[in-house]
Length: 186
Image 1 (tube, one colour):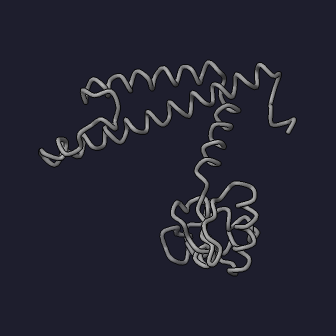
Image 2 (spheres, helix red, strand yellow; image 1 turned 45 degrees about the vertical axis):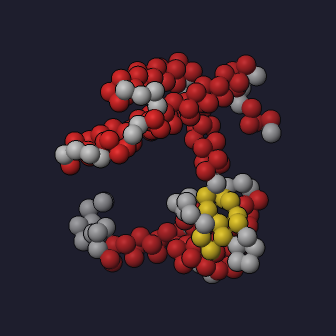
């Protein structure tokens, strides 16, 4: 960093310094948002407050607002638990893809992923990653098993990305057809 050779991000002092800077520069609401974006399992407000370095009431207020905005899912009431709303973050990614890439770029990437998908279908001998018999993969040499499981994971990612990109293409086409950003009129 800017010539400061004494700062070590791996040291506990470096992490504490970064955490204090985060606390100074971000509001309670922003820190709770930062934390909840990484919470995939239902979690209580007090645990989120600990991670966001704020009071439980402050976290609960922010989480209530985030739930009203559709950014988090809420379960129960006493005590309520929260997690990130995957649909919101998927929508946000689709919007970003449609904003940052042309229709042609998105189509080109889909075509690349479709080719990769076809290669996986041929390699595994089945039409989808869900059709793979994992028990058969796990019966073999460790390195080969690891490689096949890694390939299977990649195939699932490819399928997920194809779906997102197709939705981004559709969103970009809607915007173009309607003469611009649909979000601007909302």
